Image 1 (tube, protein in one colour):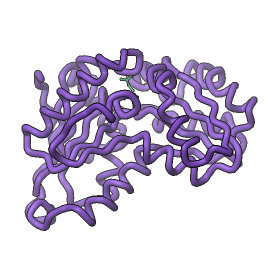
Image 2: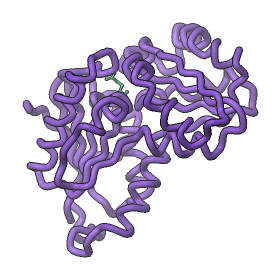
Image 3: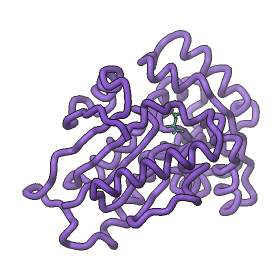
Length: 263
Ligand code: DGL
């Protein structure tokens, strides 16, 4: 009956919620978007860790049975230092596991500046497959473009072309969309590569991992059924109207109430 807590710095985390809802339709989601502090992707490890711990503590106080850190930046920089009394998942490890399993030669990682600088994806992939090459590219303009709703705009095409050039030059066979916002740009990005390239969305692989773990670890009394399932809740720390616009696009109207809160 308890909810699954999910947090991200912004609306991009709803790509993880969308994947969780597909995999676990009986579960209820408590989402926290820390929009007052967005972007995380250009901040230091100490600051991101402080924000992440506060978000996890907040969700725990609301009684969630597990927390999914949907933010790649928080997963890359903060997760190892976070304490929690409930199971905690990040999105980097599941994405890296999948990349290591499917790539034959070279993985391209598109992520925020802080995630790229942390080297977290690269380390996690090479730990499993030292034979692979990894090329990482920070794409700082993608988050504002997505937040603006410019998912298929000539400006977005031009910027995407510039960001993926190093990946095309290195002939990557796998691209990790290593930021919650980037799955929304997948159609634009796909056009820039030939059909042979595999795109990995961390949201999808993380949701599959959470579903697998809950099937084994979840106690019967905290499991939801269609009868006991609570409504989903969506909390944001700022700019609720802006969040709502994009949330409709991502969850296609399939969502609950939106509440503006202070942490
Ligand atoms: N949610 C962040 C991530 O997945 C991107 C947005 C931000 O910079 O806060 O890395």
